Length: 297
View 1 (cartoon, one colour):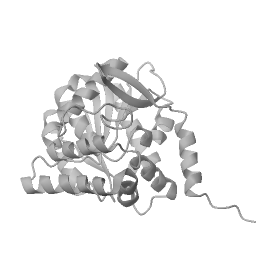
View 2 (cartoon, rainbow, N blue to C red):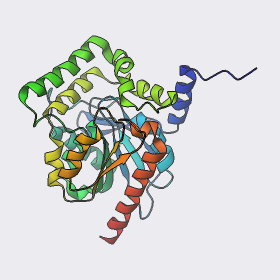
View 3 (cartoon, rainbow, N blue to C red):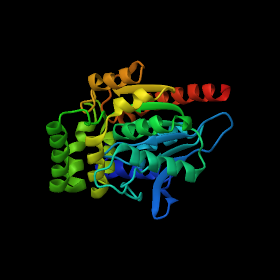
View 4 (tube, helix red, strand yellow):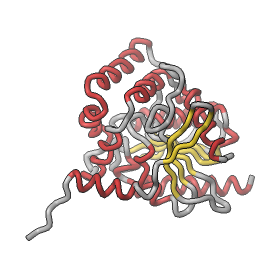
């Protein structure tokens, strides 16, 4: 008899087992504020910590493959953004990027990390860009993957429509329904079933209040303006088949950052999940180059 094909439950159990090697942690960052996160590896001489910032429909757990691949060479940390997982929400119901950047700064302070490489995916790129614009001295390298540009520069009717349609979908469907309806858009047609299940799993765990605040953040943000202020080491990459932040959109961010856009073949928006080897290699090369420049400084 041929072996039974793995079920959705089997694939999820396998990923959760891998994730269990990087257990969820939580650290106080200020009175009545805390950040949840996961980490891998340890500090090593000559290497910088790597900080990973997830997108609007995700969380720290989504980076499990990068923990495995990159944690052998350096300390790797991924947060649950404010309002996600066990992380405290930001104060404003309609926040600006600098509020999340301040939370990131407090988290790094609490962890004792003075300088690091920051990778931001999608909405995480907006937070990373704001952080870089305000606190460039803490960043040895800024890598933006499928960056969301934000809608602050768009006409008011476009901003309102984008924001309200996403909020209405959340209200109608809830996290699980949102995951069932939206997760497929995150991936290219080449993605395997394990990747599809992992994107769904992460999206189904969003916290409605945090997701709503992040939706307002997306409407209020202007990433191009922030990266234009940053003069440090920066790179921008996107999946060739990203339908959410397509290469044409990411090209504008790369131009604002004064760098060349890198396009990853056969990858969609959540490329670091479906094409993890290619993205881990990209992040690793960027980190090693940042290590080298930092050691010479």
